Amino acid sequence: MRIVIPGIAGRLGRMLAERLLAAGHEVTGIDKRPWRDAPEGVEVHEVDIRKRAAEDVFRKKRPQAVIHMATVTHLVHQSEDRYRINLGGTRAVFDYSRQYGVEHVVFVGRHTFYGAAADSPLYHSEDEPPMALQHFPELADLVAADLYAGTALWRYPELVTTVLRMVYTLGPTGHGTLATFLKAGRVPTILGFDPLFQFMHEVDVVSALLVTLEKRVRGVFNVAGPQPVPFSVVCRETGRQVVPIPEPLFAAALGRFGLPKLPRGALGHLKYPVVVDDRAFRKATGYEHAIDESRAMREYKAAFPPVR
Amino acid sequence: MQLPIDPEVEERIARLEIPFNAQGVDPYGVSKKHLGVFLSMLKFLYRTYFSVEARGVERVPKRGRAMLVGNHSGGIAIDGAMVITSMLLEMDPPRLAQGMVEKFMNQTPFMSQWSNRTGQFTGLPEHAVRLLEDDRLLMVFPEGARGTAKLYKERYSLVQFGTGFMRLALKTKTPIVPLAFLGGGDAVPTIANAYALGKLVGAPYVPITPWLVALPIPVKLEIQYGEPMTFEGTGTEEDEVIAQYVGQVKQKIADMIEAGRKRRRGE
Image (cartoon, rainbow over all chains, first blue to last red; front, side):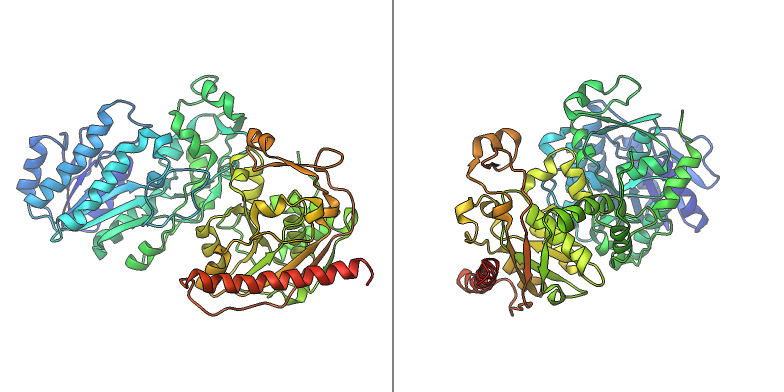
């Protein structure tokens, strides 16, 4: 199959490209960031997805499938530009796909779509609306991109669209929001709160994308791996030092004393869990995760030993 | 700091038929360690401080979904805590009763952590349905905060029952085990409820006793479990039908309270 991956130069994009290549697919990547040691057979175009040169890739390659991974999170990209990248980029992907006869588009979204709030239920199902956005405006662009991608389901019925809401990634590459948060020597928590965190190993993330491509499922799906665990357990098993801070002091302490800098809205995610129900995805695709929570935490710890 | 865990409690938690992972946590975040600490404290209250007497424990289904539905008794949640303890200590195999708690609990530091780790989740229909479909034992007090706010003189009465529990029971085809809780009103004799103070601390109200704070005194408490009741339906029935079913459960509980009250007076 001819496959185009916008956002290929990220950790997950590279792993996905390698697995697709090994499976005999023809892989072309689009990314503003360079991937210098890309394996032979993977063609990478160093261009912004919203630019004409990106459209040329679609025109020339005529891909059958597109896996859209070119969204950035608040942690990676702090600027206003993020909104334009996520929403504008997603729009461009669907416009090109429709114009150049793509059969299947996979939007790789995030489970934080649902938001973290005191009164939101454990285990969100796909039919729930995004909540708690008013406390975390930094997530608005990702939520908008997710909902926009979902509209392709009725706007372009000839195109198979899959919107995936994937949980955090945790594994030896250290990729993702959770892994990045844990990298600091000391991990701040809010005193008296210990939310569940749901994560999956990066190998399983790639497997889930492969099975999505293979089964060509249409719709919106939560994607998860093993069961969630309390944040205190994540920290203990990965050997991190927990720094519990009373909530009123929390905002003031961020970015100081060796603590990471976080947007205010992220506080909710340290108090309340975002946990998703992934039964629909497993049923539709037959996907099963291969790596449990203990091994994912162990491998992360081995790759990023705690700094003492 | 490691708090002491009672060996009997530990042995009973080990026998809970709940899928704990390698870190001793279940898919809802219920933690063996937290259950151990929490129930070791509750065991002291249950056996020594209040010397709780539980009758009819054998009527609670050993496995599969079930809903414990009871009256509120006492200005603070000692009723729920003692029901949880009786299910763990007196059932064979032991079961974990999972309550549906007031929203403010999850917003309060430490209370949030402990209620979540011991399986006492915010009272949302989504939580109830999921736990029941997962064949757990749900504990519901349909009087809600109105029930815990009962004053000393109202301690044997029942206030209005919510009807949500009945719709959920019908929808998930869950048997209802009625329970009567006696003595909580004597342990925490509420003479007034401070609603303004409650607003200040983020709780629905703060109960005031003759000795001001709601510290319970050691009186004998009783829990009477009734025969399971099953109702046929889908949960989408008219309000009148639901209200009639709820009335049957409420009457059953009222009868058990009355019988227990007579027994307590030695009649």
